Length: 189
Image (cartoon, rainbow, N blue to C red; front, side):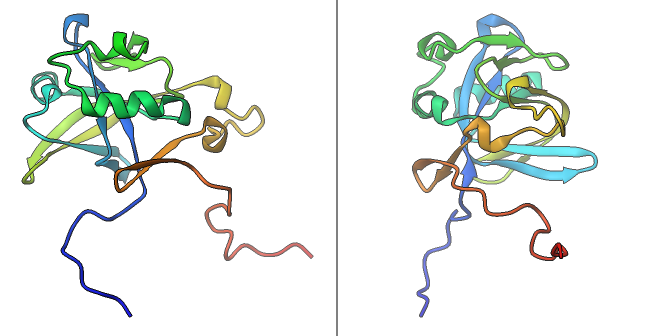
């Protein structure tokens, strides 16, 4: 039997990503975001939701460009730390020993240590309540060639050791179960 619960945000797991912002080094910052995802494949659109009181919010509103840096188990400590510390008080790149590199198509840095960096340009900001949603066009993806399969050219998410966030806790991804469409795939005779 199921019980009624207060409505809340229990659609999990979600990625815990590091979003990097800033046109020039003096305003570079990193914020940890769990409210992020894909909203369209053609055109490629994604979103991040940010509280207006966050330090990076004003930088995002002004510059309208950012990079979503996927996190890994190795980056878990930095992801958590950057989510509980403010860029008003800390240089998060220096504190976490992360390397900011100017992105190729947007004016924001990407994080060298991240295996996959998604360059985004804001198309619209929608106030929602506690958070504002920044809907953005994906203009470029930077993928670490260490994780690109030589035969298929696909990015090996499993090998990268990506991080997931579930209701206040961080997890590595579990074992491989199947690929898209495996449930209806014809069986070999």
